[in-house]
Length: 567
Image (spheres, rainbow, N blue to C red):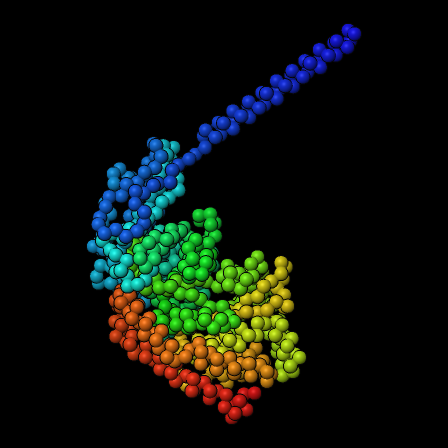
């Protein structure tokens, strides 16, 4: 009994010790966690008394943050730090147009020095603010765009975008993505561009505005207002330069990218194109090589949807851009042919996508997607398969149809040939296919995407069919098959008679000219392009005449004599 009692006491004693240790650990942990929670740094994001928008009269902007926190702000689009202006009282927001131009005076944004506008551009007031606590900890930034003393109707039926980027990210000679850069004087001295000012360095990244890829991406704020002036989207995103040779112009295009790393979301949360699609990237398109009308791409891409042609195409919305508060010109917003676009419009959700783009000199290069080199190899393997095959054989032709969206290929080539695109097919060909986890799969169909039509619709007598049959490996091989030729001829006539019916084209162009001419006039004035403004009606008539005469001329492509020479 004694030993039993002693064992019980010992066990109780051990139990008390263990229980004490558990309680001690619990309270120690709780105290540590509580301490950690108490010392968690929380700095407020500044709160503005007025949201981005249009205001008829000047007002005073109040900015608030947490107790004991200091607010710093900028009015020149630069990033606010604790070295910026300290907020001590409300800031007067008035019509910024009366202030001198700043960024429009930068001359180094084109291959030749830019002549700055000789008048005060329209402007909006950009405010960027950030708060710091007493220990110097920084919070999240707030940014807003204010159009004071202006009405949405001042912008001639266009949406309005305010794009805000730290000035050094655009215009600094070492890191600015809109300028020629610090290496330009040496390159200019070597005269590495020809007499037509078409810079041979376009094939390199020697100048800043030729930089490509993620390394050229800078952070930006994107503020979007609809035609009625409603503020529909405030977005933290990435910005890069867009385009090819037009990067050398002063009226540049931009690509914008939504990324989780910027604000936690990977898409723009506004359905710009009215069909529910929330793009992960968009383009601010400056008209490219169609500075005379700005309507060529818009025309073709707008007439396609009712007829459901079997390739990818853009949707466009008209926009006026303010860059760092200054009027930057007329733009079209359209989406990019990225994975999100392909997934939404082709019902390939959750599928991996591989893309190939044909760039100058018939060099195919991978553009994103899964394992780029495999994408390139898969496309080249497909071309070699077609080249080796006897395409005149119907059984072989059916096998090829299992590897490419043949209806899309026919619609795509028929459209490009019909509009007489001078910048194709040696340039501007883009395809995509689904892909497996490890490699691309020849069993998946290749699909086409239509873009860059600014050098089309000029010569109604232009006949590219003979050239394409003789020089385009894929189309030339398929042309050997009688079934393919018949399919192609049928669709070409359908596109001529339905999609681009001349009276419909004329109505569309004249109505577009009526709606956007004032906005275009303002753009041409901004870039000292009076010649384009004077020639607009003439250029419009060239396009109208092209489509009036094209049906007759295109049928000559299928005369018996010509078919005999190119079969």
